[in-house]
Structure formats: structure tokens, C-alpha cells
Length: 255
Image 1: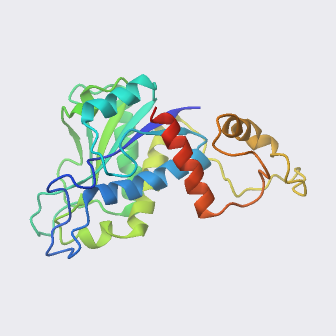
Image 2 (image 1 turned 90 degrees about the vertical axis):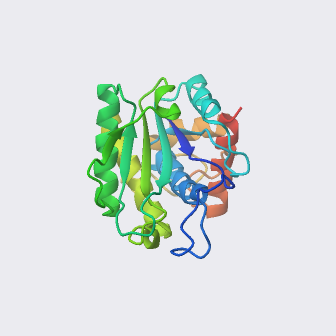
């Protein structure tokens, strides 16, 4: 099982990191947008890709952990990939924009493969290609240069673009960005996407007290580490239950 470190960039109150007021009267904070994608990405990794995830930022947004501490946590936990999720600015109310993916200046082959795969899949899912002449760029950001695993920073649209803002404020965009990032990770890591709604034809679903064979290892692990109490593994869960389990997992990896 691979582990993906997820960094929802900045904190809720980081100065200046918000949507342009003339385009968004609520001046939605960048962390809110980043976090929305991060939550959905966490769910997809856990449920559809059978991957572990590690949130290296403060999941409440209250504390803006410095970049070195985020990287240090990912390195200490030996994550396999590092994904830093952001939204950009610099259009000043114009109509340009789009999605950009960054890697470090001296990128490894694995890093470039991850960046290309994530960019291609996010564009496929969102359609927010924009007018970036260099959608794949190299910069020596801390979260890219200090990580010991393949790392990318993705800008999921511009917070001051008249084209992008109406799109990036939607739940649909957050969902599609998360799907694209997950698909890119799956492609780079050569992972098989699990259809969690698929019912194996030879499994007796009348017994909800025991997990199906394909889910047994993951279910046992989740029960052993305290994410779930392990009861009725084949019964559907509510959104509240799903978020509670994700929160337990995130807190466990923030030690």
C-alpha cells in the first residue's frame, strides 16, 4: 500500500490568499478551496485506490504549519508521493488562467511522469486548460526541493481570473480536480482503480458481519489501527461516518 502526502496549501487566515472581491464578494480563502479538493482526494485514495494518505497541513486550517514542518512530516512517515494543492493569482480580474503543475528544477523521471500524468488527468476531468504557455513548470519551492519522494505542486485555477473563479468556487470543480489528481497518481504508480460499488458475483452478501475477500486485508488494517470498530463491514455508511473515519486516520498520521 502506498502513502500519499497531501498538502492543502497555506492556512485559512494566511494574508492575501483569497479570491478577488470583485469576482467573489465572499473573498473565499485559498485554503478553503485547497481543503475541499484535499478532502475529496483523501476519500478517493482510500476507497478507490486502496492507498493510505497523510495530511501534512492543519486539517482545521487554523494553524498555518510552516513548509519545512510539512515536508519533514512527509519524509518522516516515508510517504511515496507528495501532492501540494494550491490555487494561483496574478490575472488581476482578466480572463486568463488555467491549471499549472510544478516540479523541482532537477526533477527525476518519476517526478516528471507524475506531473504529466496528473496534469493530463486533471485537464481531462475539469477542462480548465486555460492559456498557460507553460502548464508544466519547474520551480525550487520548499515543498518540492526538500521532499525525499516524487513531489508536485498543482495550481487548480486562478482566484483572480474572471474565467476561473466561477468554476473553482463550485463543489463540482473540487470533485473533478480530486478525481484527476487521483487518476494521475494511479497512472504514475501503476495502480488499479477499485470499483467499490462492484459486487463480486460469488460472494454471499447476506452476511454483513464479515468482509468480502477483496476487502478483507484493508478492513482488518482499519479495525486494527482504530479507524473503525469493524462491525458490519458490508453495510453502507453515512457521510458523517466516512468523515469521522478520515479524521481519525488523519490525526493518527499527524503524530
